[in-house]
Image (spheres, rainbow, N blue to C red):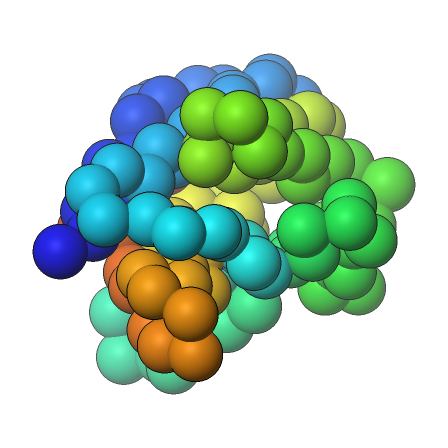
Length: 120
């Protein structure tokens, strides 16, 4: 089994910064694409940023220039540095990871979510 454990959420004023972390542990043969999504009540979960095992990144237009996704492959950990936060960034943030548990078997796992609240 594989677990994704997130940390780093909290309450911050508009214009502030937070750094989210998500560590994968368990039966990991290799980690592939990893990413962050967010969800607010009554809305669908939306993509924030993704990063491949080769460090190619992709961002939602709403966070470009403010958020940076990175990863440490040795630690199977993905990070999300969030700067210039806005009240509309308030959401539960979820990480995911495509984990190969054995050759030929790749499964997408999700973290439990961490709340980010930005006050105006």
